[in-house]
Structures are given as C-alpha cells and as structure tokens.
Image (cartoon, rainbow, N blue to C red; front, side):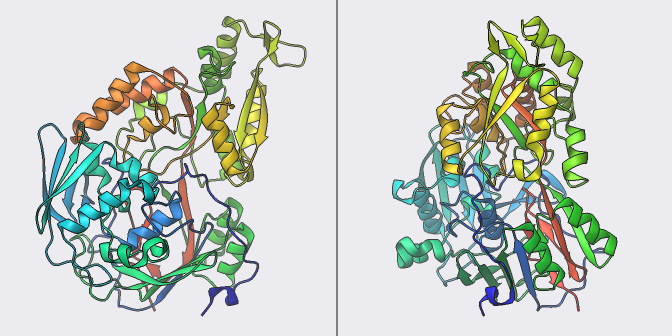
Length: 544
C-alpha cells in the first residue's frame, strides 16, 4: 500500500545541510536507556509503528549519507561492533565484537567477533565482512562523507582468522573505539553490495533487528521485523523485536505532519512545533517527549579571517551580547534550552565549568568594543576608521534558523550593542560553498556526532568543515592528544581545556541545544535511545 494514499499535501522535503547531521557521540553521551525491570512494559509481539518525520533520506546508504534521518533509521537496520553500558557511559560492552584489544599506542584495534550472526540476506557475518565494510568507506568511488570522517587516519584492516580482525591507523586514534558504538561504522553485507552495485543505496542490508521492507523515495520507508534476530545486547529483551513493522512517512511541513497525527494517520511525529506541543499536552490524549541530543549544539562559526570578526574584541562582544534565554522563551517555549559550551551535555567533554567562560553581559560587550575603538555612530551602529561594524550572516532556507525565528532576534540583540547584522540567504549548496570560501562573518550549523572530536572538524587547522578559518597550533595539539587516547578519563579534561580556549578566543559561539521533540499515541511503550539520542525501537511495543 502506498502510504501517500492515506495522507494529504505530501511534498518533497528540503535538504538539511550536509553538515547538520551525523548521528553519533561520545562516552559521556548517555548510552541507550533501557527500562528497569520494574518499569519495563509488558509487551507482546505485533503492531505497526507509523512515524511522521520532517525529513526524507538523501540515500539509504549509511556510508554515503549526510542526513540525520538516515542515521536515525540505521539504528534499527545495523548493529554496532561495540555498545555502551546503559548504567555507565564510560564502559564498553560487547556488540558484534565479543571483545577487543587496543595496542598501547592506540594505533591497532583487534576485534574478536561473534560467530552466530547473519546479515538480513543470509550472508554470514565475519572478519571479511568487517574488512570489506571499511574498505568500501575509503574507496574514492563510494564517495563516503561522514563515515570517512569517522574512520580518521585509517590505514587498513587485517583479517587474522574468520572471526578476528585487526584495524590499523597511521597515528593514534583512540576515538575509534567510541565511534564504533553507532551505526556509521557498522558492518554491511558484502553480498548485498556486490549484488546491487550502485543501487545498494536503496537496499541497505545489515544485521539489525529490523530489515528493509519497502522504500518509496520522498514518500515512506518501511522496516519489518528480522525474525532470526537473537544477538541483541543484554540490556534489551532477547530475541526478535516486538513490532511487526516500522514505517517512516516523510512529511516536511509542520502543519501537515501535526494534522496527520491528529487524524490518526500516523501514531508518532517528530519536530513538533512548540505551540502544537503545548496544545497536545493540554489535550491529555497523547504522550510527548523532549530528548536531548549529542554532538555540537546550534553554534555560530565565526570567521576569524574576514574583517571585522578578525578582531578578538568583536568576537568576544558577540558572545557577551547575547540573551539566549529570551530567545528560548520567545521561540522554543520549553522545547529547548540555552547552551554555553561547544559540546552538548550528552557528549564526553561537557563540563559545567565551561558554561561560565563567556557570560552574557551586554555592558561588558559594550566595554570591550569601546576599548577596541569601536564608537557608537548616529544610527546606533558602531564605527572605526570610517567603517561600520557590519557582519554578514550567511544561511539557507530550511536550515531551521529563520523558520524558527531565531535570526531576527539575534539581529536585534546585537544591534543593542552596536553591531549590524546583514543576512544573506542562498540554497544550501551555495551557502556551504560561501562558508568554504570564507565569504561569511557568521554561520550557524549544528552537528550530531558520537564523539567530542567534532571539535576538531569545526576548528582544527585544515579541516574541511573549519568554517572559522582558525589556525591555532596550540589548540590543534590539545585536540590531537584528546583524539589519540581511548581512555575517557584522559580525554575529558583535554576537551574541557580545548573548549575554554575556543570560547575565550571567540572561534565558536554556542547558542542552543539540539532536541528531538516527539508526540505519540499513549499506547506506545518502551522507547530507548542511542548514545546520540535517537530512538531505538527494539524494545518498543504498542500495547493493546
């Protein structure tokens, strides 16, 4: 059945920027949360979950996607090689790898694999499958993006025996162990890749509890229960998933998505607008949930090479001059919170002390600009050497900033301290190209990622996503050391140090956290969440 027949006003979804994506995060991001024995719902197999989501996939190939929705879906199609302990998010548990060894220099990772696992197409899971998975990522013809980033300084994979594999890196890469806990680096069926060739993008094949049923581009995707699944983690129930089917229906327009939910055409929706969320809560007929996500929050990248943001005083004034809570109250209304750190609270390296580095203080912002020689002009905008304090903010329709109403409020707040913001809006490709070229003073991306090494992408010298254009050797050294070790206890203080340096120098200005806002029927029980904060449907059931 074509899901479109039971819905109205379906339209194509707009792309989220290829940077606002990755699903994954770090040791300190709370891992999948399973209900305790006393809380666990009494579930019986059966039922169909129909989930109205705001974004359609760009591809169903986990190795080439740049969209968060694909990674959210992939949680249920693929199994990670390693999992995080739900009660201790610095402790790793077996996944498809039963155990592992890390060389003292953090350059070699030996994985000892389960022997009882099969891919959805019946292909045995083994060391050769792991090797081919990683080889496909680094093959230029694959055109991998996020997965290639996750593999870092990958050097090669050696098959030791049928169920033992050694992954090698050209330099220490302790972050690898944490990145294995999410689906970006999960094994894919080599048989399916060979069979489908370029069409594999429409036929994702993993080892997870759900497998592809039907995919109609820009309309819906349905996963069906994997009846043979019997290798889930100990913190979930054992055996196959409860739900018969999970269908994502792609409904990009907020009004259409909410209306479909209230008509009963879908039994869950995401990205619920604040006013609709409040109304649904008051009606008392539904459940609602606001789930924090991991990685980097909504965050300004400040171009340190383009005047006037090449001046430290201007960058610091931008940070001091904000009133985030006022924007949260006006725009988000309880579905988000101010954020003062470059890492989300769920992510390893987040520490409350970082929140105090750049306090909100408009008087201090004015003082910093006064001392730097920026004097208030007749129209309230500051000037120096005959030039106005004017900044270019480059964005694109569909990024979420202007749609949510943040942009004009930021503009008004900064005008109060004498800074004039000029918006330039382009299609996503042109906007990202402008960031790459450094034509902006400000841009505001966000990242889903399962490791704090997201900071290296944003401010590391030579990174393709370093839209700040920063080259800071001391910061590079801290970030490299933090990424090199696999020990969370050693990594966290280094990332705290890095964040403080980033904020003090005004390279990045955090604004708000990211959140998954859901509304659902009351009989949906047992949703767990990945380390990044995306739903895992394995323990989910629809109670009758």
